[in-house]
Image 1: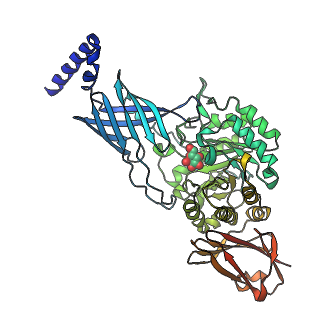
Image 2 (image 1 turned 90 degrees about the vertical axis):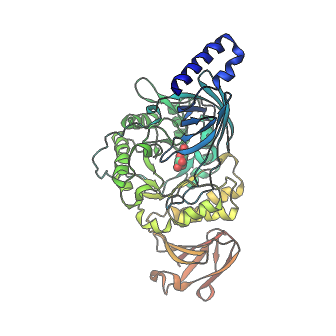
Image 3 (image 1 turned 120 degrees about the vertical axis):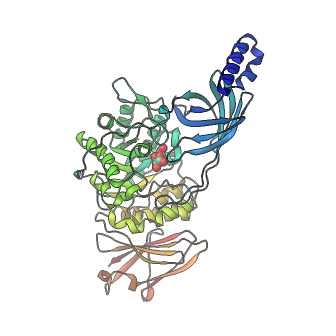
Length: 526
Ligand code: GLA
């Protein structure tokens, strides 16, 4: 009865508003927003693409509630709809810290305001990114749901692709540029990679992260958006500089930034990447998590599918698994799916807490890495401005002790001398790139002072004395802590940041290590 009444009220309101325009607002007030909505926002970077965010809205009186639809449970929304004016906010749950994801600050709510016009919601959205405009349209429930999983291949051990015998070194666009990366900035970064001396220091991959994608042409081939008019020409440019080029995709239908993923087009995309001349693929799980189960066999099959597709191109393409350490990728399935490196953690941020938590949680995983198959605690933030020089030296030293990939994430065109001296410290890079991988060992961990040791191929050892505390610390290191292979031998000790020999009188080395800083030593037989 109520429904019939409401429908007829709506019918008359619509009729009246056609005749008397001024009445439209009160007529719209009768509209019930309940249902499913697609909120389309333009992506940053003016690339002509949009992001779809789906909502389930429930209206009761003037109040609205519901969900921003997101795996696993969605984010609750609360607000009102009155006289054609809508207002609601997301209420993000407190972030949970897991092994893979260090604790993060609570997400700020997003605030949606707007009006109902002609069946659509014209919205402004406020968040930490500033203010965005968006148009929301009704969709079916099915449109908000992820597609059904595709059949996955039977598990097999893919052969080692022979690449990345030492941890890959290069640059990636995400940490500095995120959605603002484009053809011009990638070319400029390739230029700067060479002119700054970075390429000579060993950094050779120029990797385009998320937001280059547009959609698919009528043959299902993946296409680039306005920011990347000709990917093959860009690859040629990078190759002419003596560098290699990397790209990014996802096993899900959407990438993490909401762009086109490789779901259902894995072989086709691998062929496209090879035709463009791509040398490195970062394959980011993202919306694959909405579709597939998160257990090791399923993730292995997902990554094996692309690994196999890459191999079938017969082009050497470094395969970078980005799955945030899910299902303990390091225990075997990462290498079996031909991954050359695999993320072991959530995303790094340019601050001490993030880098410290990620970096020092990696030591226990070191035995799982081997030439061709590296743990990846995420890209470098050195030079991005959120940490002190001491902290960035710790970042570089720790990643090198771990034999982590060294993928710079800063603007190479505008590097301060200090940043250059950190990223291009050849003595530290040599630790990272030691040709015979031997895992780092924790010698001691005492009240924030961590002493790490990494045996090197020539019988020498690298020692890192790290100070994680908030005050400078007096530290010492004695000969007795060195491995038996160095016992009784005449040794020389070098400070790898000061680039000078240091004395070990009476077999003891003493140093003041600044807060959040490091002393890196190389101890060799004379
Ligand atoms: C994820 C990855 C990041 C970056 C973004 C791009 O968060 O972990 O490294 O690639 O996606 O959307």
